[in-house]
Length: 282
Image (cartoon, rainbow, N blue to C red; front, top):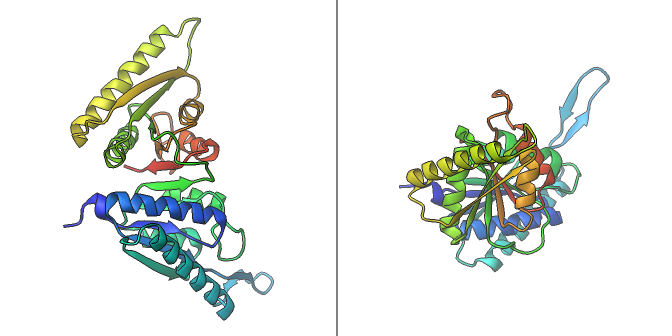
């Protein structure tokens, strides 16, 4: 029987340094979970067609196919060098990179992308690829920016009492169990007067209640500390996560329009955080 933790970890690769960083992160995560790793290269060749005729798509050249295959072979070897017992498979998908990742990750446990790519045809362009993957993935999506070291081991999670905020907290507690890590549950509030006491107390109670719900749901005994501060949620979360190993946010929060695939807080954290960010969809 397949559990959530044993489902494949899917990572996008394109030969760029950023995708190498994402690959290394995905290898470590797959090893923690005892899950297989799928490395994906999306190869797509849109070109301008005749005037007023829209766009056409050409089959990739033999040279581009050869390069993609070389990248995937190198990704497999890099993963095996780091984790010899890891089950690694590779996928060359003739679709735009973000869609290729989403297709392969449809039944995955996690999908991982670097924050930037080569910026060439068929390559992972992080701004667009990582943003689309984070917005549309059916599983948790992790965006891995260039970062120094493994962090202090903590997992910082944004908590706002919403259903997706609770889902993010459950994910953070589960990850903490895999990593023997501590969790920092972060709440933000806006000052409505000259004193912060009422807002701070209300937010602390909200975060503590959410932690208890998540503990009940997951059975987690992880060490959890609560940080509550005035300010915009994304800024408070990013500041708390400056040295974290992982940042976790829901794809939307209490204040976001429900039709938005990514809320303002999750988008801002993705753009501002210097640490890997997991976006949870429920």
